[in-house]
Image (cartoon, rainbow, N blue to C red):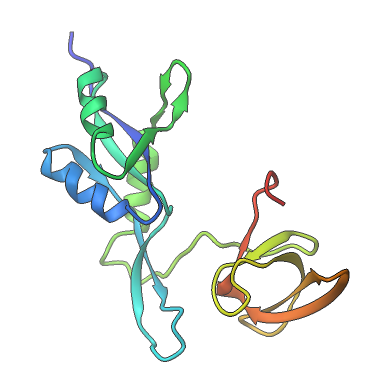
Length: 174
């Protein structure tokens, strides 16, 4: 009895999603890389660019055969299939179909996964002159600006930066 193929989440090296996606497709394995349109972070340009909805992840549709799993994992830039010690965990087909609808190219909706920041959350600046600095989110200032509190030399300072230049730190890193 042949088991049906299932969708699995594949972790990739940082910024290797497109490389892995193309290489897996060359192996005749069905893959899905959900992309969204976002405004370019460059101040001198007003472009909409395609970025992965889930940076570092894509989905592959493969069977239970370990050789097929190995073929995916041997792809340059792939790290591992998400799961537990007893093997990878399948993603329900309904979730993949929902993602395909949300990220369809004929949709004019611009979406993202950023959400809203809550006072006291630990954040890290990812762009600009403060890149790499960690701080505590204080409040929003206007539409696209935020104030974060950073500590330097035993003193605290409030810094105003673009909302797009800040990412929430996971609890284990905060």
